[in-house]
Amino acid sequence: MGEFDLIERFFKRLTPKTHSAHTANSPSGVGIGDDCAVLPLRPHTQLAVSSDMLVEGTHFFPNANPQRLGHKALAVNLSDLAACGARPLAFTLALSLPEVSEHWLSDFSTGLFNLADAHHCTLIGGDTTRGPLNLCITVLGEVEVVNGKTQTLLRSGAKVGDDIYVSGQLGD
Image 1: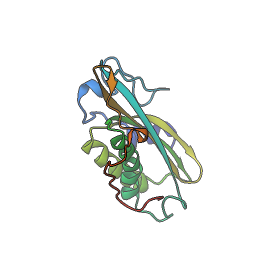
Image 2 (image 1 turned 45 degrees about the vertical axis):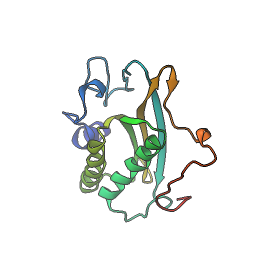
Image 3 (image 1 turned 90 degrees about the vertical axis):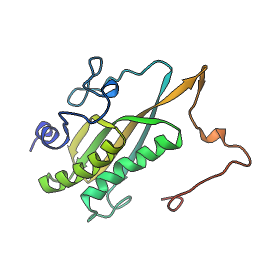
Image 4 (image 1 turned 30 degrees about the vertical axis):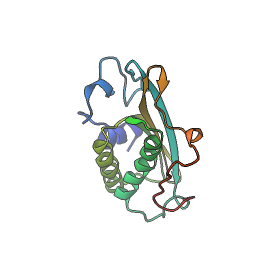
C-alpha cells in the first residue's frame, strides 16, 4: 500500500467534526494531502504549537494496543496545549511503520480520532515512511489575546504560593 492510499483509507476525513471556522476544509485553509497546511487564525489570537515523538521500545512496548497508542500519541500533545491554556485546533501526524498492517492502522486511527473528535481537533497533514515504529504529532492551538496581553500560561509565570497539580509519574 502506498503513502497516498494509506492516507486516503485511514487518515483522510471527509467531514471533520470540528466547527467550520477552524477546519482544513474552510475556504481560506489548505489541509491534509498538500505539502503544508495553512490555517487562518481569528483576530486577537495567538498560535500555540507543541510536538512530541513516541518511539517503540522507549515510550511504549512493541506489543502496545494500537487503539490505546493512537489515543496516547495525541493525548500527550493535547496535554501540552492545556498546560499553556490553549484551545486545540489541529494536528499533524508523522508515522514511521516497519510494515503496513490494515488491522493495526484501523485500530490506531480509531483511538487517534476518538480523542481528536472529543477535542474538536482536526488532522491536517503529516508524513509516512517505512522504518522502525515511531509516531510524532504536532498540535496547533489558539490562545486569546485580551487588551493586548496574551492569556498563555507559561512556566515562567509561576509564582511562590501557586498550586501545582500532577497526574501520573514525573519524568515519564
